Length: 473
Image 1: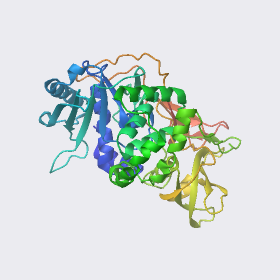
Image 2 (image 1 turned 120 degrees about the vertical axis):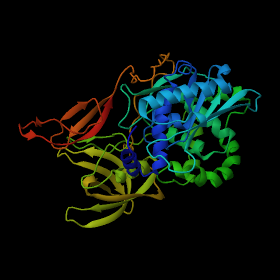
Image 3 (image 1 turned 45 degrees about the horizontal axis):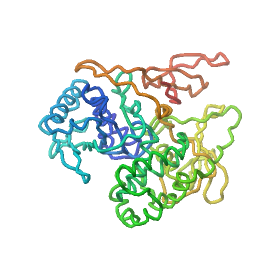
Image 4 (image 1 turned 90 degrees about the vertical axis):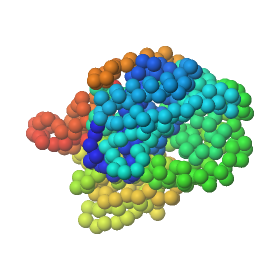
């Protein structure tokens, strides 16, 4: 188990409460236990918002629940679920020291509105921030067998950016990207939950994964037919608008560093449905021109450090704001040492030929392009001022690995007995770049310390820390 200090540092870097990050940390190990258990590995299909956060987009809203579709309805049995999760809890404790007390593992099985069995579980845990009094924090599991899987599930690596990540990483069997996208739209049409609106618009905005509109349409159509509901439309969704607006802050604010205005998401629904129904997707803006010798960098969350600052929080605020189309209030010190505050539209981080990391942006007041060295950024705050991107936003990571084709037949995960470290099919390699000469080094662990080396001119670089630039699988 990671120590309290690592978790508090991660929370500070991400601009979130420590208990939210702690739950994300524990969720990773619960997923590891589920998908290493022989009775669950090939029958529990991970889905929902937490699946998006853990399996597709590293920079995303933090979720609290685990949602699964079960392909074996007989497992919706209280005795089976409690007994199996006690085995999972023993394995997790053996691997990490995270406690999931056996007497606080509870499940209930009930009939859903279609008169089919469904289940819900609650698992308490004691992690790095162990409460001295009161109730333990809990993870909720929602289990459904009454679902249609239109496309084959896939095995995805789980994002677990903590120092105790197991050898080979964590893998989960999940909905493929097209299926989870369609499922989110279907969920939005059936319930007025702010997180569904936030999710579908973020999926639509993300240009790294480009599923075919027709495939999303077909999957969504089959899901709606199975549920006996009409295919969603903007006019039909308009009936939910008032409820979504009323719940936006209460249900979503704690999962995000800064809450964007609801209208920024609601107003993009017509574009989303024009794409799904007719294939009309807005043109993707071009990137800022790359100067000779400059490179675009898109490292995972928390990987960039600012010299002289205790955390990378300003960069994480900027990245979050950019992904949500929010302007940033930036505190900056110029070449003459003068401090100024500017409202900017953030777009891209570049490594210059001189070795500096530079944020490219547009000033909101005069619409002029500006670049800001990150070592001169003193602070950053997301505003409620929206902007329409005129360039590609290149600040967010592109996900753990490319999306596999939806038709791929997945491999079945295997269970490792307790007291055996997890081993996967492959393990990541972390690429670090020397801040002086730009040379790349591949590490098997997240460790920015570089070995002594010489630059192209023969000068010795030693005792330096590199900047994280990529993960290879």
